[in-house]
Image (tube, rainbow, N blue to C red; front, side):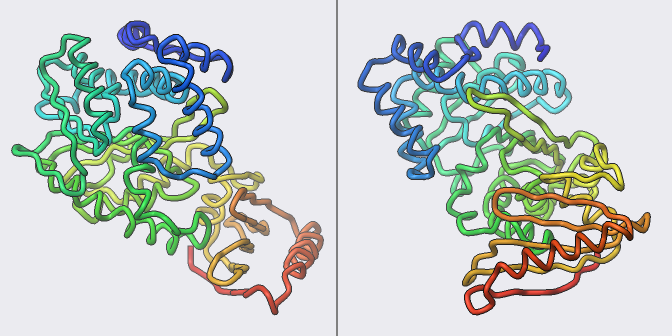
Length: 383
């Protein structure tokens, strides 16, 4: 992607580059650290990729054992994202003034870029990982920045002496709210699911609100996306009087060492009046086309946006929702069939002739679940 010169220069100065693959990344990491560290980090990354290690606190302590090592890991997993963030920070100059509170600052990569671009700002980075904070301080010193402050603290208990004009969170929400979101389903009826995420995010949104001036802005780019969690995050902010700036909210795709990742972009402001669903619909409607089969977050959006009432059939094993089916009629008169499980979502539109086959397919799939072992819940919602 095309980036501003300031972004490119910053990345070159910190040796933040794209890696063609894991071997190139590990070889470069070896040059910056040592063999023992590389092995420990590689083993940890492999176990996380396989879902065997969810101890984020351990991982970030390991990542931040040295500043150069931390920056190298950030380059592998966040350099694509950082290009987008850097451009966004430069384009959003009207928001960066006074005190900037960067939540979950890690090694200070983004905090220091903000401080470098806006020397008139005071940038306060907060992270509960002391090793990360020490690296952020070292990075600021290396860059000759005099307008940064880095604090080791849990954001849930943190209070600025003077409230911030802008609070930022970049790729940190998944880690910061990990305990609160644990066990919240990634599928399910949207209102109930996003309501559960809203409650999970509420303590963090409240902590942010307590540190933000009236009229202050929140800017977050997160791995909670339109698939799940993003609407709940905006709702939690709105519950604290921090409502979305509709036209600034967006979806973002950024490449890391292994694949392209989806991100949600939230701009919100204290004492603004827009609603989260208004911002969500504004973003999602840009790619919506009635009558077209879609997958992922677009499938669920189309189901709600293009119908008046939805009939859901949910399949549970114990208390866990495993599979969800839905039927609806589009505003244009076509039949809509939706299916979701923990890994995918899809929606197809059918005319009268194809509806018969779609109904048979629905019945066949539902029959695979033994009612003695699985619980089937059927209900309708107004969309």
